[in-house]
Length: 179
Image 1 (cartoon, rainbow, N blue to C red):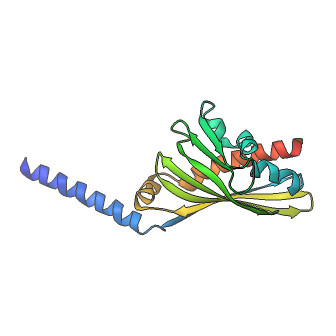
Image 2 (cartoon, rainbow, N blue to C red):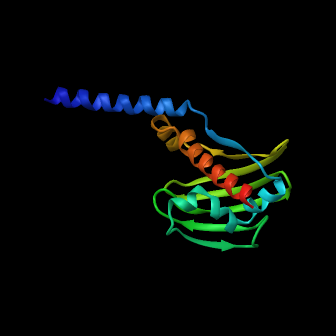
Image 3 (cartoon, rainbow, N blue to C red):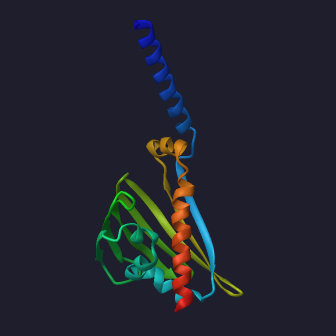
């Protein structure tokens, strides 16, 4: 009986060690990026990004929790505009702030998550003119601590976050093409 317990303990320790080693070999940064073409000029799309109230009208995260609590801070739009949110398990708790909106083709935001996991990431939107409108690219990148790399062994974070980005870009496209 003691041998069985000892062998079980060794197997568990070996399994945990293998998982930790595998996670430690993964990149310590992550990047998720999705793009879409929108049949509208950048001038029509940019206000939907730089005004966080309008941003929340198409954001997939605002739709994941209709009863989410939020507070807008700073200017109505552009650099310094911020939104603190607290939602269900699908949304979490944190804040997003526009840190640079000076260019007509790029918007940079800082996303600070508190729950379900602490994270500090950069969100970017890039707008590139196309013959029939604008190509919009939504990306997020940041550090990937060990716990995130362990989770990444069992869940594809690019697919999960990317799916939300695709939904959001579809909502943004519909809204920009409607106006």
